[in-house]
Length: 254
Image (tube, rainbow, N blue to C red; front, side, top):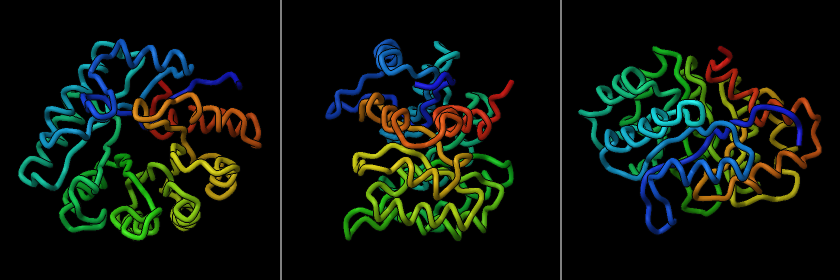
């Protein structure tokens, strides 16, 4: 394992009983320590009330500011609440970036309902991470190629494609999107882990635009991290993917 800060860009907090999730920072810290993760970017997408989820995220970060980085969540399902909650999450709660999840909105990522969110973030040079996937025939809400026109229209946003499209077909499209748009970044976690995935993402998008994520605690962060630690890429590329890119993208240098 290379010597570098390890920042997990993609984790969840809150209660989701079917996946044995709890809203205990102590349990999450044990998982991070077992994997060797220094900091986790945590979001909560499991409640219709975005404020409730953002407050849970804030509690994790407030109680352990050296280990948890808060990530905001809002949804167009409640349009009157979107922008006020963005202001609160990035202001009062100190969110580092925004997570959106069109699956719960049941409309594609380029639906106009999202446009006020994108305009707010574009005006403020924010980072947005969104689930991206192209696996099944009905997997149409977050196709990686859908992010190309969004990244061009909202060019001040850094777009992070969670899962990098998931399966190989999705990953190929995610790399195509990253090559087309310099403000698209690829995130590594997936349950469709074909051999050579990390090498493919790094070669395609460049070592400066790939970040480590695990989807913890929905997935164990250790094998997700191991895919990078054992990948056939340079040690410097591993350092960037595991943490240095996240530090730069989120402005954590200080």
